[in-house]
Image 1 (cartoon, protein in one colour):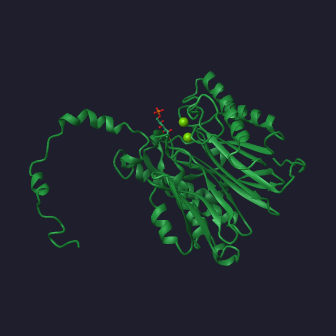
Image 2 (cartoon, rainbow, N blue to C red):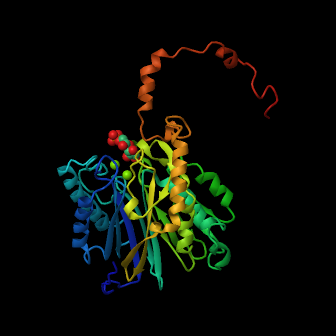
Length: 395
Ligand code: F6R
Ligand code: MG
Ligand code: MG
């Protein structure tokens, strides 16, 4: 498991971690990216070691393949993104040969043009100066979307009941800065905790519109966390479904401890996704072996892989949610799943129309359009009937 290559490639001590993911085929249905696809990706990345990347680890969460790479080329680098694209293309060839389900589904273009953003794959990247010891946690999810990280990132970086270090570590006491994206309005805002915590919550509690993209430590503006938010439903105006997200979080000495980074998942929260990307359900923390969502195509899974970055090499991973300490969280998630499943196609199990991945409901309504008849008496209200304001209920 442990590998050491020499650190000759470290001409400076800045390193970039890129996690690029895509679903290019499932066995069977949307449940699992099989070994053959992971092996195809590994072969491509292995060829690029010392040419483009320093090190890599390939994993999966459900039907998504996650390429975890370290290199010296910075974020949004064409060579690194091109490499990921090539790996997914090779995996797609096999997926097509095996007639896997949804073969090549996340490669939305026939050719690569400089960057995977907007082309289907999701991507979380951060560049930093490697500390004396650099622990990072890479999260990979299936059957949910990037807003699944709003709640846990808030707890990790802004909730002292989760992160004792916010109170006890002097380098964290000045708090963290959250970069929040308005994914509908295509704009972003920076909010500082603890002072602006309530405003932050006012935004990120709304999964329809706001997603946390990055977190910075305020003391020195060091990057602390980043989430893939490429494909929040729309690319170039076209609806392309939910994007099972990935995230990178730095841990220890001045950042939350590994245990504080994992703690929000000990009490599972509800996330959008699950069956047909159209239901609320719990997110279940699991080890790599259990990242196989099958019940009602779920419930949503998250794995957490811990690495020590050492001269740009990825030492590890430690499969952090495999710990028995998360058994109870899994039990709770399954109980939550049972409870909400009872609602079937009714809200609040079913997502509001604007958040559903399946946009076919309007088509059902179209078929009914001619059958709708105006409600009698409605004109009374429309023509100035009694309103709450008239009754003095509201100002
Ligand atoms: C959710 C997901 C699955 C599919 C479902 C139907 O993100 O991937 O739940 O939506 O299996 O898939 P299709 O429409 O491909 O038959
Ligand atoms: Mg799929
Ligand atoms: Mg998936």
